[in-house]
Image (cartoon, rainbow, N blue to C red; front, side, top):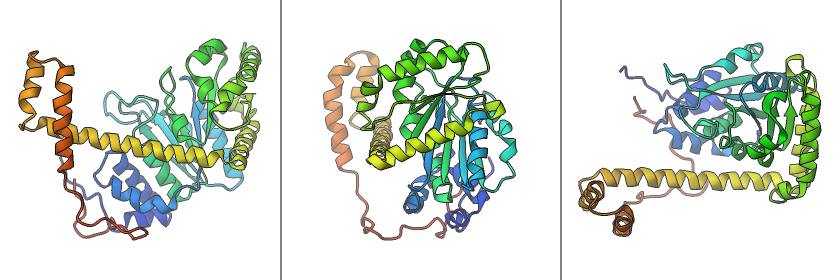
Length: 355
């Protein structure tokens, strides 16, 4: 495999100055889980938190890409820079994104105010790539006022976009099935706005009516945990013709205003940061435990006993956990922790990482 220098001088600075190529290369580092990712995230942290993120989710074939394309066009008419993350299925041949969404959004490829990135799910559950959250932050730091995240399509467990989005738009079509199936899939629990797209098809009006009744009946229970007095609107659109898209943008803006006025936006973002911290901590602990379990140390005989069936896993847990905790306690902390407000080491330091 060829070795490429992935850390050219000033890569983050170039991105912050508006270099689209630098942004693309940073996203590639994030997607490839480069060891530089923590340093990249530290450097851009102070430049994040300004973009408003809208998640677009729904079943395959609902017209999400067309809707995102039309929303982007409406946002650009206001002069707002837009970042789009289109999470595509993983190619079974290359392992990369199928890139169908990039093809469907060609109208914006020459617009310097729009940055579109297709990302492969790479086997991740939840309808999102693992790198989506970091890419969202990079687009935020790059200066995007709006970040639109389109998922690969939802099932009953693929609802992770609601964890990243400030406003979640669930897109359905008349062929999606009845409202009970929508409720069963958990879509009503995550939706801030419901859209029945391809509303020129038979059954669209009936689905809009049924969904409107359902969200009205479930308003109190659905929104109580969100701390927001908001009844989920149900809109009809024909994204291919631009019909209803301006009304959808109006509802997104109205939802944003409601979140900001009541402090719910800050609470959502605080919860998002706390969740990210927990997930990163658990991931690091899992990696460290895997490394310890691979060692030929004091845990090896117990692991061998479990593998051979001489000891059941539940009996092995207590002594293994005790030894693991002891090993983790002995992990040396950094000699000096960075001072609050100090500038972290830059990516353009000598001896850049090579892969």
